[in-house]
Each structure stands twice: as structure tokens, then as C-alpha cells.
Image 1 (cartoon, rainbow, N blue to C red):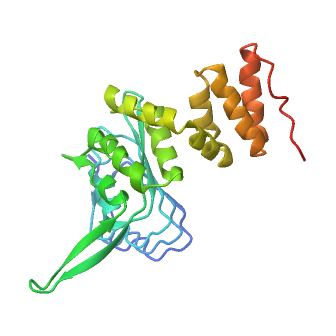
Image 2: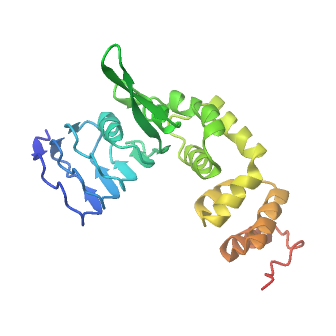
Image 3: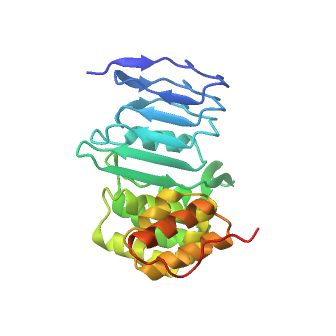
Length: 258
């Protein structure tokens, strides 16, 4: 059984540390072990059952990618880490059956509101990131709750957040119910042009490929025209190749106006 503990303050104030892979024999990460590691961007954990002590990842403002290499043992440590930070985080959770869940937890702001008569302070969060980070039940990800928040997110988050939540959940559908998939797909159909524009501008070819590989020719041509207008040669080339594979070589010439 894992028994090793990363000591309190072990890496605190390390401003050069950018990536950290926690060994499989670690059972606990001590208090303030990574406190103020301001360059830390990526964290890989063997599983979600590791104990995270107080403030272990406090003041790590660039931590934005967390991987759980084994999801079956729960995700309680992910919940504990998210409690310490408020920036946007992408979490990848790998399961023994080969499936993967990729979840975006949006950025949120918070403040402490004073209740003068009671002489207490209450933490109040702003933005859907605050509620997304509460999508845990019995140490596991509550996938139905996570997916149900998308209807709330579309009123408060911008396209760069919504586009990635949508892509991640459809491309990595662990725990995705048929009803939730239908709702995501419907929103995609209604906002397809905005989504394609975002994926093309950000050169997110994985998302673009996912949505175009099994769609009708007219949608591929729509994406091709958008890519031309945005001067995105990789996306234009991909769309043209996809049309050629289907024997649909007509339409746009694919030339740029320089």
C-alpha cells in the first residue's frame, strides 16, 4: 500500500518548478508542500485517493492542468486541490477500461462578505467555476451534475470556455448520459459557426476534426470558408482534404488573398 508522504513545505517557494508527477507510492501531500510555486502549470497524480493537507497548492496561480492516472480510486484529491485555487483548470481522469474524462473547471472570482450582527464572514463566488468545482459526490465526479451546469454556463461564460467544455465532453464522454449528449449536440448545431471560428482561430484541430469527420458536406464547406476568411491554412488544407476524400472537389478554390 502507498505510504510515502511529501513533507510539509517540501517544494514551497520553488519558482522554477513547472511540472510535477507525483509517484505512485505517495499517500499524502503535506501542508503547504507546493505553496507559492508560481510557475507550476501541470500536475499528475497516480490516483484521486491521495490525502491533500491544508494549503498544499495554495498560491499556485498557473496550475491549469491536472491528471489523475487512475480514476477508480476516487477524485477526492482533485476536489481538495480545486478548493485551494480559483483559476481555470483542465482535469484529465483516466479509467481502467481505457476511457477518459476531460473536464474544464472555469475560472471564478470570490470575495468574503461580512455578516456584521453575527460577526462572521461568508465566501461568495462569482462565475460558474464556483459551482462546477462542487460537482463531486462520495469522492467521485458527479457527471450528471457537471453536465447539467452547461445550461447555466451558456448565460455567463464566453465562447472560449463553452467551446472547450463542449468539445471535451463529446470527445471524452466518460459518464456522459444520452440526454446530456443530446443537449450538447443541440447547442453545437445552434452555435456551429461561432464554435468553428473559435477552433480555427485557436488552431484546435482536434476539436475541428471531431466535428467535421462525420458530418455532411455542406458543414465542411462552411468550415472551409471560415478558415479562408480567417487565413488559417492548416484548417483550409484539412477541409479540402476531407472533401477530396469524399469526391467533393468543387466549390471554393482554397486560395488566400494576400
